[in-house]
Image 1: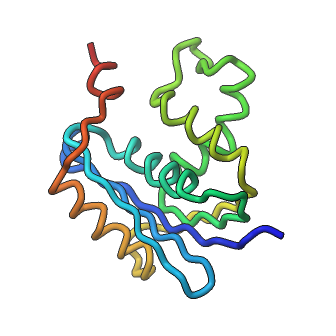
Image 2 (image 1 turned 90 degrees about the vertical axis):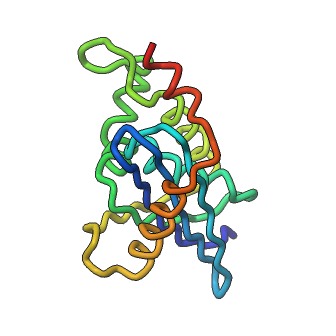
Length: 156
């Protein structure tokens, strides 16, 4: 039987591109774990993706995961766009490489291990966990400690 885990996520970027951070709250029964990191130079979409990746990769056994996010980019990307990209060998309709492909590939791999339900919520409307993730993600963006090598090197 799968453990049922709730995962709240948010990403933040100061400047876009600029310093960025993400935050994840994982909740299993009465247990809660917060994951966060800050990057020197990245984008808001990459941080939204990293939040989901971090949460899924943290779970060591297959789980039923209810992911609550305010990012339509992440939700639509996984539900609507990713199946099409995979059929087209990770190319867009214009035959260009999918943006943030390094992170989409990590999400694709992480999703193989879990059963996931998605819930999109509007940002900044007072949802307790979303607001908490937002505060933590912004704090991590203000104190970065990691280079986003793929993003930094893909610009050249």
